[in-house]
Length: 102
Length: 437
Image (cartoon, rainbow over all chains, first blue to last red):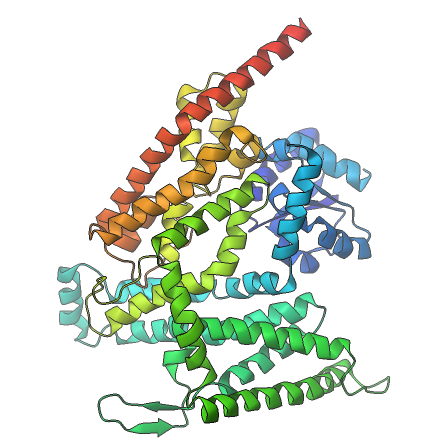
């Protein structure tokens, strides 16, 4: 089971992407748990998380996010703009799995 | 645009935006959302614009049937400054790695120390002591709440950073340690607040909160309410978005306090029994102005692009994105458009995207200024409420009509730019498939 967390401004725009990623994972038979949350709540939501991704619109918080995630050894990266915009669930899922090393 | 140039701009913008103060303000005010949004529902029920329905309720429940509804309204809207002063200090201290709740509590105390503890009845001139005057705990106290919240949050964090607290030996339970840790900062902060109270009381014959209102908040509210200022504000949000930064969350983070204060000033006019008109001092630029008109279908009112992609899209990219973007757009979310079209870092869409905000501001402002659309009262809807519906709830059929005009404007403004971008996509796609063959 891979636990993936996506963080954006309000946790709303990313939820569409989350649904796509879940579908792709299901089709591929990969067990995942994916959720989207506001970036401001990151500290509280990292228990047992394997990998965190940032929406590009909050990409500027990466240094802060890296500090928070670094303490818990969670890899974090910004979702590429085009994949985010086109809601490319497959590519983003691949990115997450690659970062998580699975 | 080169990556270096982009990084320099983003970095300098973000340095300003990511300061602890702005973050705390943004986060802190977010906590008042349930108060204003759910409080709105009770207010809406209490002042339904349908006379027959009102009369019917009065005939069943008696003339006081709205009293419980106003009780809820007064316990939400009317204490928004009181809540903000806690949540802003909370957010600041928490982000600095300290006990947020304790900072919030100290901040609340400072707010009360520097506020008058009596009210004078205007009609009889009788003064009653031992109260927390509600006149200052709502919209009129907003700027003071922000100032106190930030100062106390910062001061509390600084004092703890400097280890100005009573240290407990190991083995003392954490809860006890935490309580004691706050004692010295609390003593310093309360003393400072008392000196502020004395200064304003003796030297200026007023209170801190009233002085801030007169000298800072009232002028700021009026400034925000002017056409040039709001047009500028409405250009800043999309401008930041062009650089891939969530400009709207930054602009509302800073401006929501003033927007809300204006909304509440309007509701106060209704509460006082007057008609909500510009002659009676109604504000044009309120929270609804920005949330439900300027950023409708997403920052930059990008619905025009989405509609064009669906109807006139020739490239595979446009056709696919149109389908993806339309449903989020209905709920005023446009990240698929900003990142997928794209608008971010795209010189082609820069002009229409940044200009449509001020244009929408001009249209909405004029609609109210000429008396076509009524000014907004206290009723608010979340920014995710679909257009036309949101306009109807906050400003009646006129609000819905103004929104329809804005939607049409968006289609007209974006269309030529869409054609160009679509042609670029198409060319790229043809070239790519040509290479494959």
